[in-house]
Amino acid sequence: MALGIVTLNNKKYMEIKRKLNEYGIKVRQIPLITVEIQSTNMYEIILNKVSHLMKTIQPPFIVEDSGLFIKSLNGFPGPYSSYVFKTLGNNGILKLMKGIKDRKAEFISLIGLALKPQVVKIFQGKVYGTISMEKRGNKGFGFDPIFIPEGYNITFAEMDIQSKNKISHRGRACEKLAKFLINYGIPT
Ligand code: ITT
Image 1: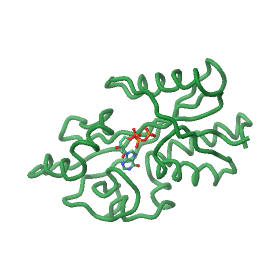
Image 2 (image 1 turned 45 degrees about the vertical axis):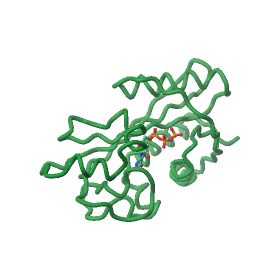
Image 3 (image 1 turned 180 degrees about the vertical axis):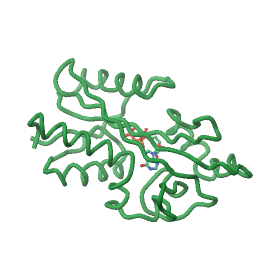
Image 4 (image 1 turned 90 degrees about the vertical axis):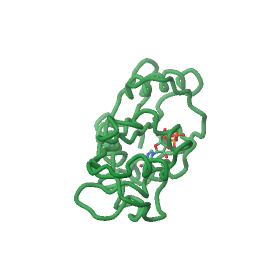
């Protein structure tokens, strides 16, 4: 049986698929719109998403939520990343950061696993980095052209999917999920 990944974002799906396939875990995409409550707490948002989805689809499945947290902007856009990407985009973020020296940022990924009815597990992955001075690269998606992971001088959008997956927030959350699933014995 393949593990369902609930997302409308095909690039996100491909990253998760590539990572979980490395562990022998088969996946399939479930392209459903997810209900997102407004909260500053990412755990609350993901738990709410999972419990909503449990009303429509059978576990096991996963749903993943990411946020970009910029230090000098007090963690903005954080849980509002999706809305901010659609409204301000990368150019808007670069504009907000104009003249700001401290460009530290982090990406956080939370994966909610609906294991059985009433049983949910959350896996977190994080990557530190900086916001670039200009957009670079055309791979990946979202904020990738402006995020330089720590220890590198290229953006996520200049990396191929395997390289991004090795160090990214999502890649790290997927590793934790994969190890848990292998231990638990489902669903390979
Ligand atoms: P689904 O909710 O359908 O899964 P989404 O693209 O809305 O897809 P998120 O809510 O997790 O996914 O993403 C919040 C925003 O952060 C969104 O604008 C993404 O483009 C961006 N984002 C998420 N992961 C990213 C990554 O790995 N690199 C760059 N930007 C990312």
